Length: 304
Image 1 (spheres, one colour):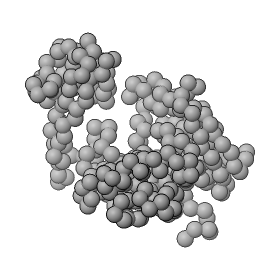
Image 2 (cartoon, one colour):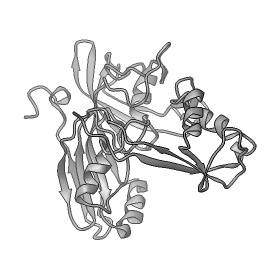
Image 3 (tube, one colour):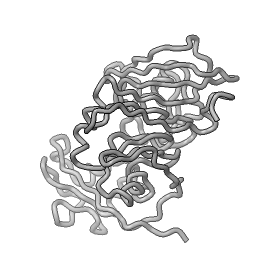
């Protein structure tokens, strides 16, 4: 029988936008994956707190208050838990994440079945410098020390740093190499309230796409991202009318597919963080980290 985790206490500081709302209204709007009835039940069970006291459903919030809620232990969904160390020194740890394993706790389902939890069993002080979507595999870089975090954050902003992904997209692009610069921002999305997608008023974003292999009805591509927006590659390839094969969420135009209720972590697509190049945060030496793509994302006859 699967073993429950240890449970978790979530918390946040109330912002100005939530001031004047009731606790129930705020939590139901802020976290719509649980219904209003479910939030009311949690409050009545004494699992929601304002500061250190149990909250009432009609308590009014003001900016600066701390709201928290306790989730009792639960059995997490089964996910792949096999990882591999790609690089390690006193400052850095690069780990291969399998598709299906969340990088961080998210979505209310995962706590211990995450890459962060697995890595911290070995290196308790490790902090991820970026994240991959649940369905994305490949390199995730961790800072092993507090001192390494700030230089690593700076390295990720350095224009010399290269982040290259391998993907299988639908259709046949007209060009063998092209750029996608569609801005990315939040759009309304009923299952979550909002979702990152292509949006005219969004943040500037840039992806460079190179076709490696053309297959019947689909293409194998490398995508180098010059910016790091949420779900950028999925959105940009969909915007270019070549959504990832099997993506249950993003369709042509880089927006949610009509009628979909898929969450961003829903699997089905093939996307892999293949290569990461950056300056070492302490020595300045240039690091080239690679993680072999899964078989479906390898050039036929070119990669073992």
